[in-house]
Amino acid sequence: MANAIANFFKSITGQQQTDIDSVIKNTENVTLVCKGCSAETSKHQLLKNNMICPKCGKYFRMGGKERIKSICDKKSCKEMFDNFESVDFLNFPGYAEKLEKAKALTNEKDAVVCGTAEINGCEFAFFVMDSRFMMASMGSVLGEKITSIFEYATENNLPVIGFTASGGARMQEGIISLMQLAKVSGAVKRHSNSGNLYITVLTDPTTGGCTASFAMQGDIILAEPKALIGFAGRRVVEQTTKSRLPDNFQSAEFLLEHGFVDAIVQREKLRETLSNLLYIHSKTGRGGKA
Ligand SMILES: [Zn+2]
View 1 (spheres, rainbow, N blue to C red):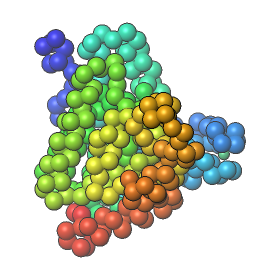
View 2: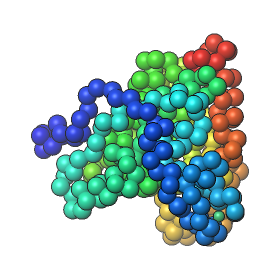
View 3: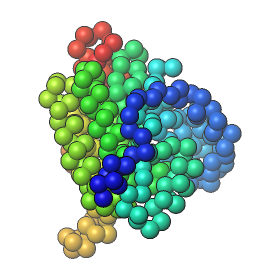
View 4: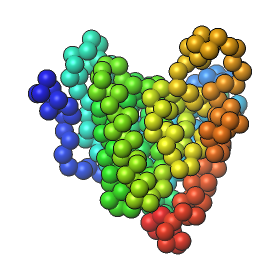
């Protein structure tokens, strides 16, 4: 077990920085089908439209790199900790295969992209969870990467913007997965104690332990329209409480009505909204470090 723990990550040293633009360009020729109206649209076209269906307006789920590129200043984005890689330390049946499949599908090593970027010259640190990678379940690498970006932001006095999406804990990593909630929460608290801002943007779907910890610890909590946000699934809550739940239960709109979310922001307005929030909370009042 000691060896397994020591080999948690294939590589954990050093900080690599990657040019995100070149990675996205390789996937632009793909055609995607809208789940709302079945229309086929090229990814290139969708990217120009913030990954919103031009026919029916449905939001496509976004990859981590696409998301950060859609809101930050051109060429300002630097990815960090992208050499962290999950390993199957419990020899959990099927986990190694699932990891390989998710890596091939997303071209990522795990379900979160972290780094620094700027919006209108305001620098910030970010993490973006990618639900296409094993439903962004929270394993040791995901927890370590988010913790690391909070620690970097604390040291460098940077605000953090976090885009959340998750199905919950990664059961293939057992108790180690659950420990990530406390570990990330500790880093969030230390970042907060140093007087820095943390904004979360809840995207579809934000559920399970992610909702129970860092997704809801933002100083300002934004959400995308109609995003599913909750802890336990609807059926479990209905059976436990023996009550019929409203149709819009666990939607961003329901959470806004009940005070869990500060604002619902359309994707087209997200960059502008985040820019204003960073600027208002910046320590210099002139952009630069917020
Ligand atoms: Zn559509």
